[in-house]
Image 1 (tube, helix red, strand yellow):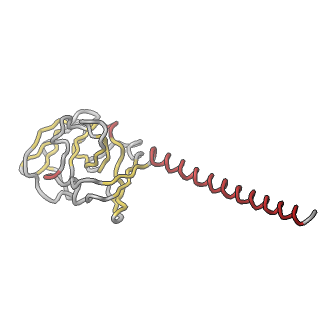
Image 2 (cartoon, rainbow, N blue to C red):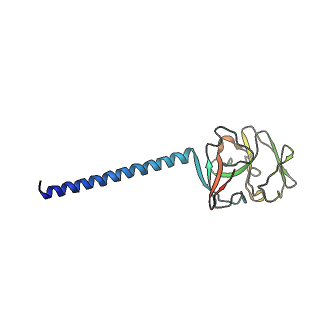
Image 3 (cartoon, rainbow, N blue to C red):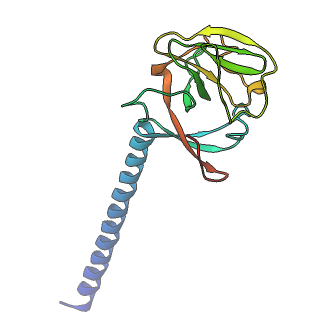
Length: 185
């Protein structure tokens, strides 16, 4: 074989190695995107908090992770911070704390929230309610939601449909990862 044939063979071999590397990396990248898509649509959700309704627990601009599987084997509990579809339009996504459970009577008076006539202890709330509300009787399979910043929160007290159906809950907020890391529940 003359030197020109060897040169052509080396060039062809080099192009094949480059093509193989490109295909190999493409497979890794496509697999990564596919896994990210599946995880974000079935296991977790990423959200940015736009308002101050959950201050001082979660500040505006915070980035949080929502666990979509948190209620597969257990029921939502009072005090859980959850992401859900706003009941009045079924599209907007809200983040609030579960206050009233199915079958409970929720009302606000004298600056406090009462569940079935008993005052609710809420260490996460910084100021007392400035106005009374209710009573609201939470229907079966639904929940009553409130923001932690009670005097500046658009929540169940004011909605046309004040209850969030269990199937409209996306998941439980697990942790904040920006601007700092903090467990939420």
